[in-house]
Amino acid sequence: MEKVLVIGAGGQLGQCIKKIVALRSIENVVFPEEKTANILNVADLAALFEEQKPNYVINCAAYTAVDKAEDEADIAKAVNETGAKNLAQLCQQYQATLIHISTDFVFEGNEIKLLKEDDIAEPISVYGVTKLDGELAITAALQQHIIIRTSWLYSEFANNFVKTMLKLGAERDELSIIADQVGTPTYAADLANAIFDIIENPTKIYGVYHFSNEGVTSWYDFAQAIFKLSGTNVKVHPIPTSAYPTKAKRPHFSVMDKTKIKATYHINVPYWTDSLEKCIDALKANP
View (spheres, rainbow, N blue to C red):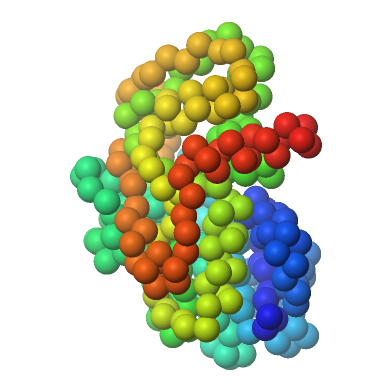
């Protein structure tokens, strides 16, 4: 394996990458601490590149607080756009391939159709705008890039919808969950596996790709599946988005077409409930 540098190693996806690297016995993967891999500190970042001279850089670092971003647009822009640009420019300098994680929130999500990579991106939140601007900054600065848009990311690590539902389900008898936002959950370990399938594939076709688990669901049905698979006894009520207003608007339908990544890199994509069961089993094994 050529040298791989993981930026944002302490986050949810970064921790899943550590897990997959161990399970697949992948060598030559470096997980620097955040203080030495701050994507907004160009001098320290340049020193890290000079020290490691990576062949691949996986960027898991991002500002992902969707509602908070409405009030912290400058911070979100700095991390999601400027930080991405800094990495792309250093990758260009060191002839490294950048694998950058983006989001389904770059789409408006007002049509019921599978979203393809070349569909028009029209984000409806500050978070979505900054993530799209990050994609554009990378594309302008670096030819050898692979941008992977994903959705509804969860795992046994960090904070996410699955862990929040399990916590609330243990504390309450009833919950109300939005039923009119539709998408696909993505187990971060599956995304991590897909990233290394791409790295290990001798053929590289650069550009934007979509990756989530297979299938379609709503947040309400996602929650129901979490409680069923975990054996949590809680009554769940479906509610419309209008009954739970948030600062940031969310896409109503953001199911992504994964034909391109499957055909190009021969990636097997698990069904969402199968992966959810694996995650819940992992959480039970290490509560």
